[in-house]
Length: 192
Image (tube, rainbow, N blue to C red; front, side, top):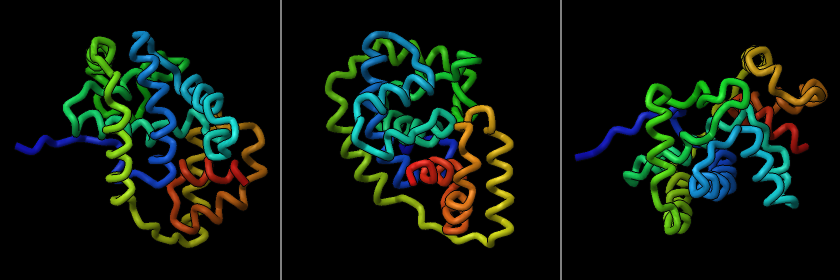
């Protein structure tokens, strides 16, 4: 019988897959210690572990959902506890808005804490290869649509974005026009 897996995003992006490979070990370490981790701390630990990787250095907490969804999909496909459930919002101390099993989050977190995660890294790498094969193709947007997407994302996430994000407006518009999701466009623009 095939198990239905509900995710917040239709398909992963190449960036979310690369960043999932970086946050997975951090999540595993926190699971072993039976600790929740905030999105900000998750990004900070990833940056500390990969000081020479520009993509990782530009990881921001507000864009963690898609990366965690890659981890969540792996866990559910392999009948493992939902490792993504231990990543939480710093202010609410709860899973984020894109976490699809919010009502059961405390139960999922306890399942994660009691599981033996020692042997799972190699299997996760194989999962990432499979996810890379199904990444979505980009569909270009008209400039007016790209501006609307940028404005909506900015308004919704302004408190969590870096103060200098306005300096990257043109880069973000180009990325959105090329078809990137808003979350990825904002994060990718910071790398330039």
